[in-house]
Length: 90
Image (cartoon, rainbow, N blue to C red):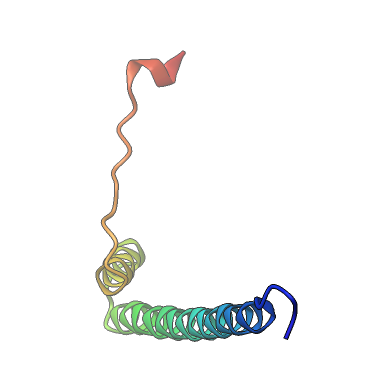
């Protein structure tokens, strides 16, 4: 033990912080992996919608819109329509 008696206290605090950081890193990596797998599955679903629509004779533009709508719905995205303003023309 050191003269001031603090030697034993700093090591557990450092170990605890390292443990928490390790857990946080692992959880972030797991979350990122799950998000990637979800995005890939969503893309496959949207692609299937497009392929099936094209196979049944739906026009390309409509099939594309159907696939985009599916992607937005699965990914919980809200499409934003761009409306030009007078300021955009200057």
